[in-house]
Length: 619
Image (tube, rainbow, N blue to C red; front, side, top):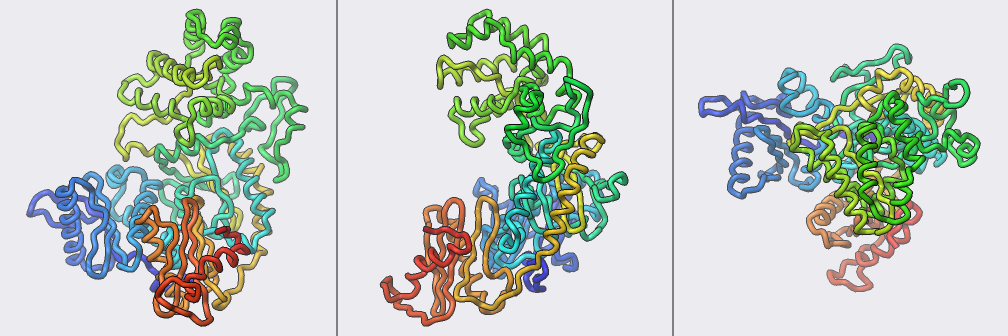
């Protein structure tokens, strides 16, 4: 699909960013507030007219309705608008594009800018307006390039055609990411091939953002934002600073990752030190036999690397080792507490002394184990993000304190956590209180909620390994070498296999047309991907657009049929997917009322049976 971009397939007709702080009085020209306008060749008078009118109407409607305006519709265009402080964004598309698609497009564009440049106000204070205008143009071009009309409607990721790829290659890609993620400084990653996703551990939104930088390095464009390449790795490794929101970072940290099998700087307690790799080959995966044969790998202190915020020196410091040893050898008081299910005064004193002697924060972190997180989630009855209720509660208490590491706050939060746990299961030992992520948010504003991280990219010809890592990963030579060398051979082999796979030949119209959108993974499966999409496909695309918009506006709607005099399209949706089906050819019997002779009402049964071979289960 990347090679099938048509000149008229551009989704966006207008886009601009307007800064109202530069236009305060009646004498101030409107052009002073225009930070960026697309198309750039638009006459300045028309830019001023559009920006001034839309910004004025949007703020007026928002003040009158006491709620932010989201969409403005003109005769030929509809505009999705966003307002934050003095900034005003507007993105205009044709009225035929679903409103939900226009809104998602604008949100993706703003998120992309903040991901690579940080807060908008701060970016315009640190960079020139011309530099940031080039950034907006690049992001806008990326979101519109290489996409079909269906891709614009669903705002989906561009993935490789899995029907032409050996499933074992997809498994190899997943194993490469798992091996890299064992490094404590690696949060998550994805593997891309020629601008398409092969495998990813990140959310669809984060994966889409990473793909922008991948396409830029692939075309060897000028690298912005301090991107640097390491000469020690033959120029195949580059990095750039990115900014994550607090929910994105918490989502990456909460993912269950087993980091206890190998670590770049894990010292050997018995015998001479021996350098180990994260994964020598793709088949070098941990097994139960390796855990039994090497007792040091099964020791709970190795689990101290479960928190990706600690450096190697912190993980293996004497204080942490001492506290971890204490957790393995419980005192008689703690044993009595486990057996009786009651916490005595002596236990409280013992716990407070233990916190004071080891620094409290380090001791609790060293005692952390995967089982602790699972047990805490189970006892609190948490599901999804609710399982980490203690973490969020701790942040809420701390947000107003000048001393975030106050022992009183930790002690109070610990008592609250013990009370909630004991209310669900009496007689069970209380898990260690969960500490909040080290990246705290002292300011509740959205702009200050952006947390700097590093995007590490290792390119092997058309294949790219992209990892979200800690900022100090690039200065840790040992971790970089381990991640680089342990994945180099696997990436070369994967690239060689993917390079030999030829894309499917474009086919003509078949007996039916379908589109299946996975709402969880944000992927699209359709038999239109190999065709240029002429007049034969336009009725299906138009009907799909209308049905998708109707599904988004009506939450209770599950099935619908849309038809005209010549064709009919069936749509069905669930929480996880949307599917659209059209029967091509044959005689169309349109009776206008539901009966067994009307061909439109036989579409649901045909879709259920014919889409099974495409992996779409509607039964």
